[in-house]
Image (cartoon, rainbow, N blue to C red):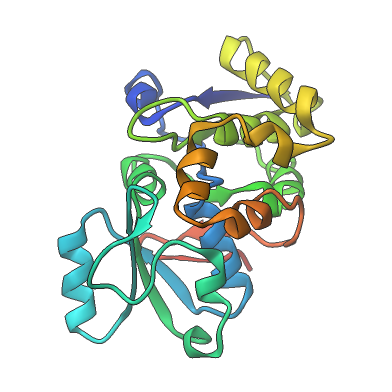
Length: 236
């Protein structure tokens, strides 16, 4: 029997899903899972996700590099935020990075009951599809959304993964069909499609257009961040 695939469209819906025994794929295109992938692919040792600013400050006092973002902006008092470009420098190579964001790190912390947790974005979508095709476990694609709300960019990314797994999974969920339709309708120009999204307007208003352009580049990396119980590292 083919494994089952479901898509959770926002954290507010996660209670409807049983995560036990599942592979959960966290998706936060703009920008946490894109940033995590970029950081690890550019030689950051590990990314330690934390839920609160207070936890981030605690790590900061211990000398860790800490990225903190709320409302799409770098949080005051921190040198790093949630831009992938901030984690491509020599200063962070080989270092442990602590990250707290509005949505993505929260979604990861909410998924601890899963058998396995990986992260996905447009940057590594083919690598994720290839990996999941070879797994026997059922799959939940978990869209981080925005403050418990639906987000266009995460759903389209989930649709891309679901489409790639169509021949190796089963689904009867409307969320999966809708996500696939959204992605296939706009696959030829993701950047143009996302200009309609609320988070595009939020980030571009804050001067982060460059980040958005980077985060919609499909298959920039052939690597997958995986949760090891303490931090995210690149899958061996």
